[in-house]
Image (tube, rainbow, N blue to C red; front, top):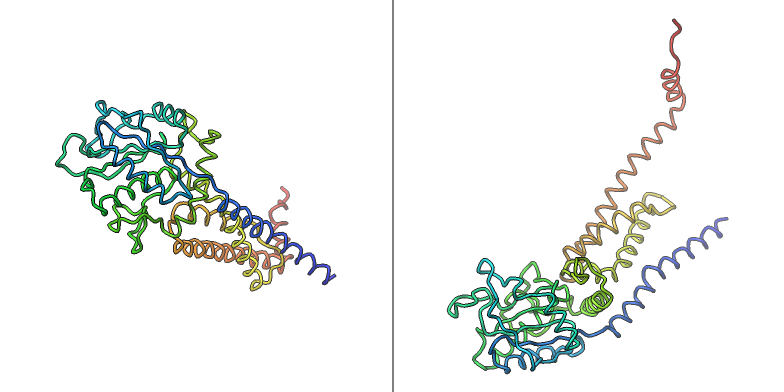
Length: 341
């Protein structure tokens, strides 16, 4: 019986490894090797010089394994109707979904990048400050300004390339890292290093964000009245689903390891479900680097530990009840036996 029990445990372990480790790894390797590319259409605003569109295009050519880009030469966006909202960002007069749909369909691209030499958050004041770019995931479009980088030297050209890829990165579901990182990362807010490179974490996640975005927009798998309304958190959530099996697998291994110490035979699936679902939610919300993954695992371990402490109390109470069956029976009789009148 012992040998049969051990063989069952071995088979069960192999099945779990295949489901939560081997199969997901093979799928993820396929995504990394055969991921789609994002097609970017570059549109000039008003009389902005064509040179800046070509410079922005060079940024996507640097990441040719992820992006294809084209400069749209037979159309320019007229910004005469654009208004500024609270002196901070451009209104929907600029990010218009119907216009984006017409342009993306006509020029066979996924997103539109508008290039302007005006200041985004101070549209008519050429002496005021300016954001470098702004992205609208819902309309699959972004805008960038070259107003502070028009000298033509190498540094300014690199900055234009960096901003272009940065804004399209937002359309793929990447946000500014919440903590200023020492290493250069194209998704950092106003990165002073003018880098064209994604961080190792973002670079690793890019294929999964690309696949999520392409499938989502292609098959209209999204929320919203227009059928294409995406936001960065939703894209990240879908991309992170590729890594959910690893989180569940870690939960299983962790619970199994704890079972050895508490001398339990069966896996507590409730503990696996609670710790894994919480860990995945924390991963979606918090993780922007490989270093943050350790925090997710620590939170899962803490939840599992608290769960087992609770279970220990329950088992202890049940043990007390089993040790005193007569006392429990006597109490039960007291509740059902009433005195005669």
